[in-house]
Length: 436
Image 1 (spheres, one colour):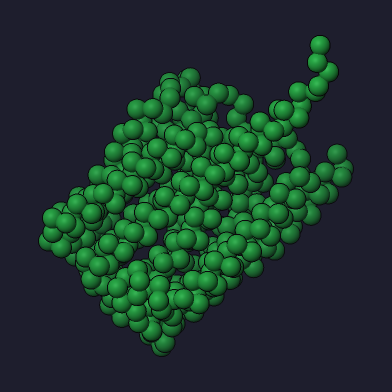
Image 2: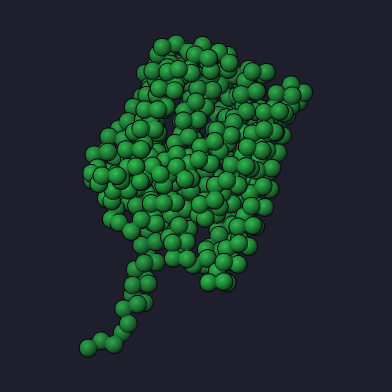
């Protein structure tokens, strides 16, 4: 009879499984970020800066809905789902799916009432075709992102990868076909939105068909809603302020400088998409892992986990950002077919910006793991208030440079507030663990 302990073998198996999941998550985020980068390149080349700027302004509306969805549905799902002790097809995830459908219904009703006054404020006059395409793209992409979040929370990384191959890989195929046939040039922003809606819709179809059980016990949806509401009461207004801080300067640039200025900002930001691979992978993996550690009450292990994440992730982000900034002009020439002083400046400033964004993301996840969303809300509201006050004056006075200065400054302000709140949370956690 063997006297060898099975523990080392189980440890190796767990390590291999974790490494395999991490590699697949990284590949998935490379697919998503690479697809988004290539889509931007295709659209800039096909539409030109003015029409791409118009598309970017409409895209802000889609991102606004997704930010609300993150606050109300997916962010709580990341933190709550791993703490559930049930199976992958538990009532919780089926109930969260129902919440997602309710959320999209509420958004549709609100959009029907608000689209006309909002479009007048931003100075765009959409036609019926644009609105239908925007609604289809928003609904399909939002559902697709919910399914991704649910898959990551249940550690179904292969399933998520398949959905993204269909949804994000499909949009490249659709836009490529549209470009070859001349549809993008003829339909402009509307064609791009339809291509994105169609590809995301295919991913949603595959995801819903293989989601698992949709059955829920009586009261499961209400219980899920109460649990999500506890976090969303701060995250929902946070998402509004966060969206505003992210887009206030682009909107001000569009009003003051025109849609080509918006296109330059978005094109430069998209070129930093390689850093989104790290950020998005972290958002899909770290909250789940941190929640599992917190569920065991292993607070010291949790602190070491975040410290290691900050060191390694920040170093990787700095190296990547510095490389992109150093080759800003040749990269823009290679990717977009032209280089300019304005685009090079945008790329370099966003390289600095993304280093701060990474630090903000780590601090936010750390606070969310403790289900402390109020400090995140306070930080983003302060950033939104500052942006609201100074965005238009900065752009009026300094043009594109003013917009870039404001973007970096408001993110730095958010980071300072989060670091202060994080310090207080760490002190309270360490004190409680010593008492117990």
